[in-house]
Amino acid sequence: MPPPPPPLRFDVLTLFPGLFEGFLSESILKRAIRRGLIGVNLWDIRRWALDKHRSVDDTPFGGGPGMLMMAPPVVSAVEAVQASFGDRPGRLIAMTPAGRRLDQAFVEELAREPRIVLLCGRYEGFDQRIFDILRPEPLSIGDYVLSGGEVPAMAVIDAVMRLVPGVLGDDQSAIDESFGPDGGLEYPQYTRPRSYRGLDVPEVLLSGDHAAIARWRRQHRRTAGPSR
Ligand code: SAH
Image 1 (cartoon, helix red, strand yellow):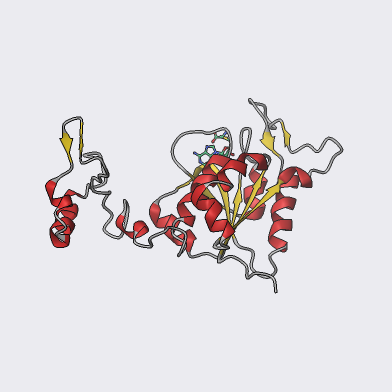
Image 2 (cartoon, helix red, strand yellow):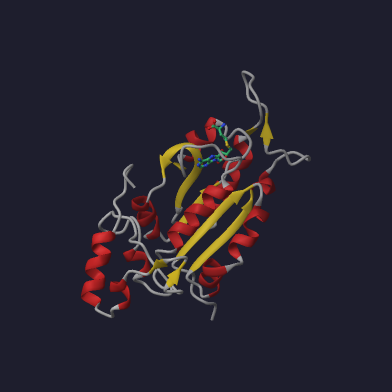
């Protein structure tokens, strides 16, 4: 019998699938994929180019610098990938600096989806008709401009997969950390050695007194915001 499909599957559409190789083949993500907890499929948009040069970009009407991703290959690629899912189209997200800003609340929302399609732009971005026809959710990872949607897509995959049950070694790790249920940021943490360059680990953390440790951590949780 074939193994059951992973609970969460990402489909990434990009002109540079090779960028994901190292990302998918190391550490937590590699383990999660091997254990069938996450699936990541890469689709090369160039496969859906129509002419013999396999063009996917062209100059903007009205002039201006750079190239734009053309609507026909991108729309065909997304439609073909979504059609391969059967009746559920999955949640379609286009990476763009003009989108809503990614935060932990949205990451949690995405972690409840079975299927997420991430569309990566390049050059100066997308022909507007890609948005008009496909109606993706535009998503930004912050107010700065990168040269492609691949790093933003990796940020989404990384943040979301940590919340899939079983992916992190200890299910508590995703609850205790920054932006958790209380919205705070992580308390200071220490590991060996106990003393380093004259800085000692706070005594309470070595005490074995779990209630006192919990109290200390609560007190030292940092708050989000400019006072950080
Ligand atoms: N000309 C565009 C920037 C294009 S950057 C503008 O002025 O807004 C090329 C591609 O990189 C974009 O299509 C998008 O997919 C990706 N990208 C760049 N910065 C990003 C960000 N902060 N968040 C999400 N995607 C981004």
